[in-house]
Length: 237
Image 1 (tube, rainbow, N blue to C red):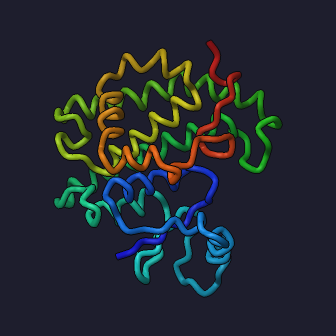
Image 2: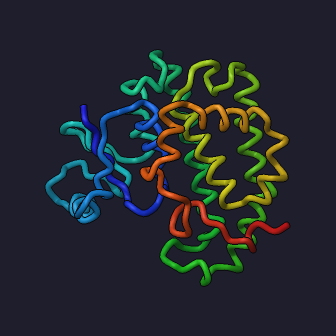
């Protein structure tokens, strides 16, 4: 099957978690909005009244006649098909649970620079952002890292399930990448306390298809329009 990924063409954002799974699996897919007039097609589908189960927002995935929205939901669907999820239902639900936890973490990372409203510019909520970022760095970031370090310690083998990679491992890799971009000073201080998480990141980066993708033009660079944004005043020395 050829998959169609619909997401904004200029940012990694939530769509990147899906791209990583598709790229690592060597799946046949097209990143629709990055093609000519693709972004317009994405917006038309979001506004369409003819799709009975239309997604609320991008990203969404077309798989045959199915249109599937929400990053974690898309990965739940793709996981078994890309061999990035286990066969047993209890294990698949565990991976999905990990992915939902990453989704919570990602939302909190976003809210460090837009704690009041996404419709406001960063400069309009800069004071609140400093307070939110301080709490994130001091309390929430270590809490999430503690959790995933513990999961890796309890499941020895290098990945969240043990020896076999799953899509949540690739998403954890992306979280580390994004946090290093947005909070390089905080991460430099914290990383030594989470050797298993950082080893997983490094191991994922060396996976052949993923390494090829990361070095290619298909990988959109981090920028100031995405979820992870670098504001030095939010990441003090």
